[in-house]
Image (tube, rainbow, N blue to C red; front, side, top):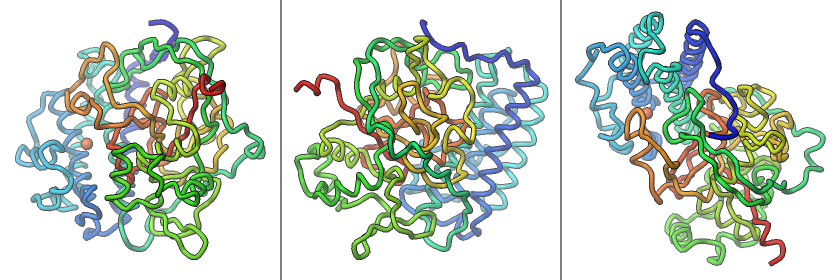
Length: 448
Ligand SMILES: [Fe+2]
């Protein structure tokens, strides 16, 4: 394929082992924090029918790690075959999980600890070139990402939980001095670019393979849509005007009684937002959060714009016009760092619009990675040449028009599970995820 950055680091096996140990430990540290800051009753309670009890996530993380790294990589016998079915996400939808005979918290922790100990032993002796599953440490990277993704899901459960705050967070960096003067939108040049990847060792099946896509020039918001801008949509009656909504979106808006983002509440003449147990006035210049695809799409129409396609989003985030190749991240090929993007559950909120100038893309767009997931207009579908790997249920069974693609990753996403090629997907009605959006417009519309 043309134009893709050479990204496969020539890590020797020892460096790869060290990286895997670091990533697995980082994910486990977060899991431990999210499941020890609440008591056993909170762990076993279902805080929303949309979410599992936290104790299910805890043992499911361990069960998947056992399945892939002990049984598949090391051909080990199942440790507790009787629990496999309980933690199979496809057998039991989230709403039914509280009624299952789940492992109690202490047992779930002990199981996870035992699995991790054995995995570290396997890691000492694994041959990374022995199979497709171990090549480049893929299966270990997949499991580190899996745990990190459940850490994000568990963070969403924390947000839905009632009760006193239990999570501490550092304040995000203030907006840089140039933020007020940023152009509202940036031009992304037309022409072909390389979408997806064939070289990123830990990329998941739906990000593969790299392929060339032609994207006409378009304008994209420099930053995600802010709370202040979204509040104007509300004040202008946007929730009560069917013109801005698709038929399905309008139907959902009426039936679900949507009138503002999830966790917003009107008090007097101001909007308040509840965040991890703390209620405070909505911060005007922060990206809007907890809106569904229908709300994002309606806002965009009200604003005379539209959501970007997934290809447009990725081109804005990765295409480097100077070299013609696609970067791993908006800022280049270096891994995420604190000054580049708001990731890793450090701040527990989006940073003000215009933050992270060092993480800007070549087109000038900021905060494409981190802060909030960004809804795109695209359905979740396979790239040309897609091959399900290592199992159909990772992506393939979700392809189709019911799911919309989100890009970029939010403040709750770990750097290990975040790339310029990473694809997330969800139903267009979902609001508990850490999702916002930005809008776009086609060049052709200028002369219309
Ligand atoms: Fe899972």
